[in-house]
Image 1 (cartoon, rainbow, N blue to C red):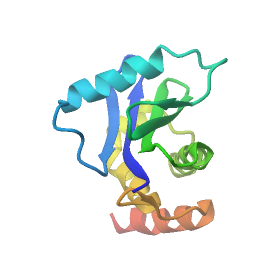
Image 2 (image 1 turned 30 degrees about the vertical axis):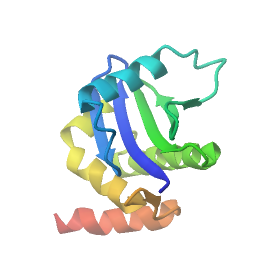
Image 3 (image 1 turned 90 degrees about the vertical axis):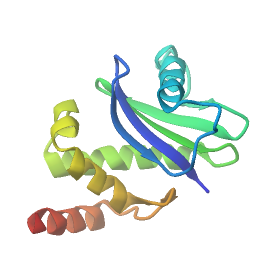
Image 4 (image 1 turned 60 degrees about the vertical axis):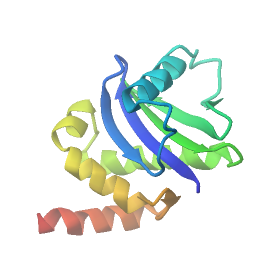
Amino acid sequence: MGIRFILCFNKQGVVRLVRWYTVIDSGYVTQDFIAQIYRLISSRDHKHQSNFVEFSDTTKLVYKRYAGLYFVMGVDIDDEEPIYLSHIHLFIEVLDSFFGNVCELDIVFNFYKVYMVLDEMFLAGEIQEVSKDVLNERLQILDRLQ
């Protein structure tokens, strides 16, 4: 399995988006798990350190900060990080084209549309679609249905 989870939180650590593709270890409480990820990522120097960090024996974090939001993917330890970093960027590009310069408020008040975008891109922890044009076309069709 490639992607274990996708998270989005702001600079204060408030979660804005969560999608779990695997069950987390029973020793963790979900909020503690997310808080641990936030502490790890927010304490890093984003100008001089990479966007990849090992989190556990089986998981590494791939993340990117856009304005005031952190987008994080938990992926298998053996997977190639740049692939997932490019998909985080594609996710943001699709959200930008869908909402017109996406911001935190778009994610908060239109969370169902953000999850719709997420579900079009990723299916069961695997990358489903990589074409921005195809994604935009599908999302426009789905948006008209609502």
